[in-house]
Image 1 (tube, one colour):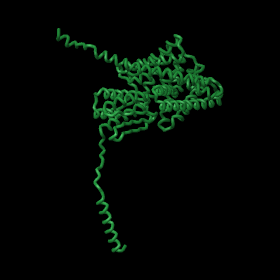
Image 2 (cartoon, helix red, strand yellow; image 1 turned 180 degrees about the horizontal axis):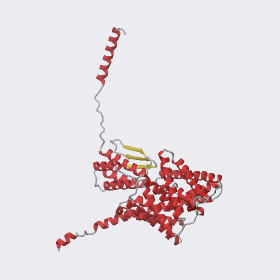
Image 3 (cartoon, one colour; image 1 turned 60 degrees about the horizontal axis):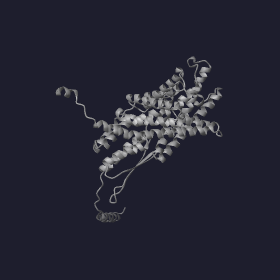
Image 4 (cartoon, helix red, strand yellow; image 1 turned 120 degrees about the vertical axis):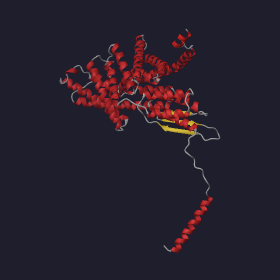
Length: 471
């Protein structure tokens, strides 16, 4: 390039740059420091995120979050939950911009230990016992140091759920043992498929197909006298025991509980998820039954033809189901005793009021109320989340198998009314359980506060050492 042209271009560039610099003003960079108000909102969002992702009812999460924001924030905070999304919004007056935080909730495995720690922290904050700095540090420590049982424990819990469900229908030890093995293997399969990031709908299909094929295989072995120990094997009971791990019984009860609390968007989304998951089971079982017929084997894969065993075994089955459910959700060892007792209480009330002549739907409502009320009152004494006790207590009552029966009947014969009636029965039972449990919690909270107030007003007993000194 010509030296003269190069000099002229350089001079022009310098002049233009100097002109631009003269027009610029000093702008202060905004630092990354958060205000205490924003820190409180972030704290609430993180706590709500973990609780909602573990299936905690929306109303309980909102009640907890408002207790925290009322403690730390001068301005009221509006909290909205829509299935997998939570929104925090704060109007800070006409002279300040409003704040809005939105987060999408990703599902997490239910963890009763983590749930208890988060609820305890929220309770301490609501009682003005923890500063914001300490609350943030405590939350970080809770999340970082949370421990779960080894994977083998969850597989054992799955086997326990299947075995307990089968114990409701039979007293045969070989069949109960076979159900435990199937539940163990199906739980392992579900974990492996989940790690492969397979959608839940396809996981349900594969798991239900596997349950049906395993039951078919056992029936074939028995028919050909390869397995004398299981000579009295019943593939129907085994299939039902495996399907119990897949049915969304707790989810349908939780959906109607959200609907009762007027979280209709969340309830609608959860109900649609229940339908999709149950349809996956129906497709998987139907495929398995078709494969069984190709080998000349046929059996019924629904519990319509089954009858309950004696009351003692039903109680044992209910205890095993509730304790196994709590174990699968990372409950403490002492929590297994409490949740097992809760399952026994709910099932006992169901049978007792049924024997008095009450039909099945209001009987489930009474049982749900008893579990909800008792769990709310004793939760502080046992230091176990009331939600954990309630969930475990109503697990033996949930109509997951009834919902599955209804969809199977519709698939087999869409023109028949049996499927529709079974679906309506499942819905009404789920509504009854959810309404009973919710009302039990509503009555239990003021009752618990009254008992705490009464205890605090009692005169303190002097210690024995002080009594000896007085003597």
